[in-house]
Image 1 (cartoon, rainbow, N blue to C red):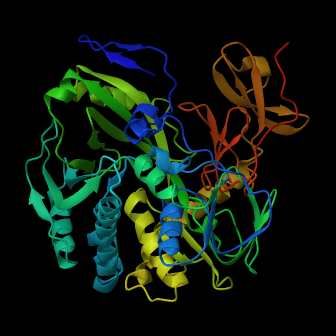
Image 2: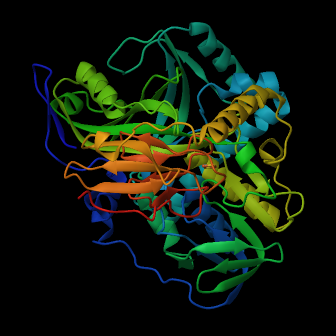
Image 3: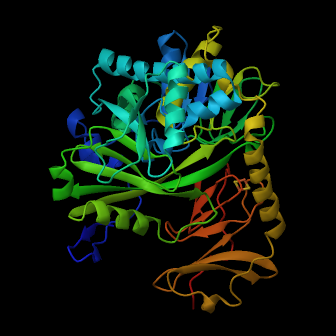
Length: 517
Ligand code: FES
């Protein structure tokens, strides 16, 4: 969608598809590197042996493979699709240890030692990005900038965060003024944070690695075998960096995580140029607020977040465009996209051994919207563990920790799953197919089975089974993106039934795909 803002506040849409992030646009991803197309990598078609197999070629997987290879391990990285084609391409790419108001929460619920580990690991992750980028001369639009969390109403929570961050070694500053186009009550500022183009960085690192793309892992065995559709990998260690872990047991990560969606628009135009960049990255402490950062002449505005599959706002992009129209009335919306994050009950990622019974399998997941530094932290911790070194920050990320601080969230997640499983067969939105309007979706009963139906504007019907193949919850229609989303753990499928996001591992095609007569 290419939305042009007019002075009278009306909006004109000029037809570009929603959903393509700015990062995957060829002119930004490849122009400076002399390449016109992505690198084509092979599919694994034979049995191979390696020290470490890493599954999932997003930022966490690529960095983990890179660090292990640097230490002399042989490493093979595999991905179901291509390098960076998952969540990394949809991030806002802030490299920051400022993860909303986390330090006050960590000090309150986890104590000073764990809070220090969290802060130090993330500060070290920023330094590590800087070091790799400068040592390798990677051109990825890397910029050191301050990062701010602001509030429009609650100064006390900002003051508490400043104190908490200082206590764990971060020189946080209480700011009253910002470069945002509206007045804030207060903000906490961390200096020497960073932003970059995530795929330019990822491409530069991944080209040094052995990667197999379009390689679908069907099984992981605790004897070190990774089974794919056309070949096996025999490895001493296995690392799972697939955004949401796809092995249900052991580990039981589905009990301890849900997913949330967030929407982003990129603006350009006179208003953005005139303000010559924000000179920093911003996020509202209120979850219903907005995030801001610049990339070249663009402003990236994020917000309208919600739990995947629940409270799907029918107008997430409209909400962002209205906010943009208020602050930047002469700006154009040139790109729109969304991303999805795994959320843990205590807001801390799971990084370490997958389970007590699988000593050679490792996991990195639950990045709680802070995927850039969390990926680097994962790579540092897991590469140390595989090399047999103790990492001084690893305890706070221990995947099997007790989460008293997150017990309310755990109960909430359990309630969503239970209610959804019990209601899978109950909610039928339409009696007859023809009651579903063009461009709309609903559920009907067919041969006693609940079927999801999307009717496009040409009266073509698309049928899916609404029972999620992960653990059986009921899929919900997402009007913003024409997808079927699962509220339980966040699997997503396009309107044709193709799998977009795990933990589900297969599509939801219905046998009765057909055109309306
Ligand atoms: Fe777990 Fe759908 S993602 S039941």
